[in-house]
Image 1 (cartoon, rainbow over the protein chains, first blue to last red):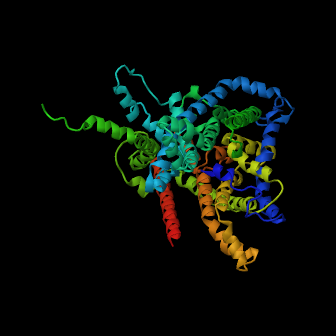
Image 2 (image 1 turned 45 degrees about the horizontal axis):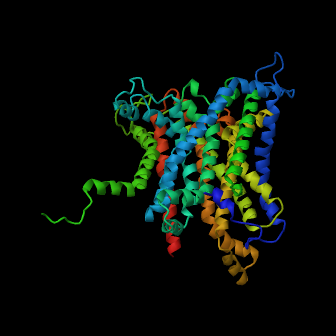
Image 3 (image 1 turned 60 degrees about the vertical axis):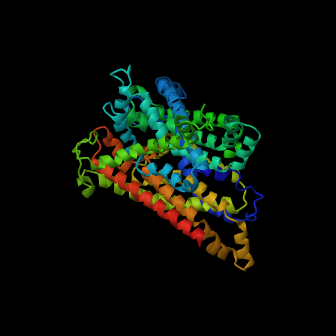
Length: 300
Length: 275
């Protein structure tokens, strides 16, 4: 998904292929934008409205009326602050793990793959042709107590007999990192692939060793891909609840699990809405700060 | 006194040099291994003679492949997912391609707002997209079902179509269109015979992406599907009591079908380039 790069510099208003002002662009834009406004923007307001509703005394389950009760947000936060914090910790750890796996992988594909480059790129996304839920369930088998990974680790002396991975935070983080790996790898590859190998040679000619070249040349040039990749991993990971539900235990629940159960098991729409809204606001703030800090405003 | 030959690197030295030179390739190999173990597991367990629970290996059988609809509700959910996927893909591809052409080929007011509106759904966690749509449907007293899922899928697929097609439009050489105009093609003919065929691979790629996003979506679907089951929803619901091996058959078959489509696409585009 190299799309964030396609956005970056491709077309400015002075671009040569642009036609003069007419009605055509508005006709082209209208249906799609109306769809997005109706089913993305308006629902966000609907969510905001639901978040301050209250269930009238003695009414049916699932009936709520608007009373502008902003204290819902405080109540919602207090019942789920643990899961809330956990979501960001797990998403952060999963992002770091995914980056550690994806950066060398993207680097190898960009610089060391020769004629196999296209095949390797297909291989990066190929696992995602199977259902993401089936792959997550497969991880429960791979990490099972009698499975290959745990058995292999138990061979190491001093490892406790009760050692396990399934249903632990580690399993959830491994699952999250796995599920969003292509979103990390492809933007990284796209920005690494644009680096002219001669800049790396030039750095070597100027007596930089491998590490210095990486730190001063490769890494800064791959920054747009790194920022896009970490965002595309962190955002969905923070809101995910499938990995925590399948690979975790009741103590590894994330904010997505709380929102889901508030909606469907407890039928407490206002709390679910308040939590969703807080999640979105937090992520937007984090993303804005992160983009500012890394100086890649052109992403959006 | 023996003559000392030119120092030859010892075997271990050479081995370590080879290792450090190929470190990145070895690392990439391990990463690919990590990527493919779950796929290998899914494929292997599609041959498991599992009975009810497909968590432990119990013996090899071809029965699941011969009879993929053998377990209750598997095929119903797949049919639902296919129908939702096709309808959403067609709608999202048309709407998204139109936006992409407006952004890539026209001047207009509100470009920044449009870009933001395209970007935001991709930057919003799925659980928020799903919950907000459901909140709206509930406030409007609309019961979620098949069509609410289609509405939701079109919504989140549009953005991905726009960026994919837009990237393709941006990579076109504008001189090709200018040449067509120089040869007295009018605007419509230029679009029909030059621009559209050149952008077509991008549109096809966007449609494939939209279909796979729709087919594989769970979180937004779970919020907005009511009692309608889709394949991912089926897997999630049955994960607690054990997934039938037939689900693995469907998952593995999808994997190979998608792989073939991508490989054929690559071969075709390479041959086009050559000719």
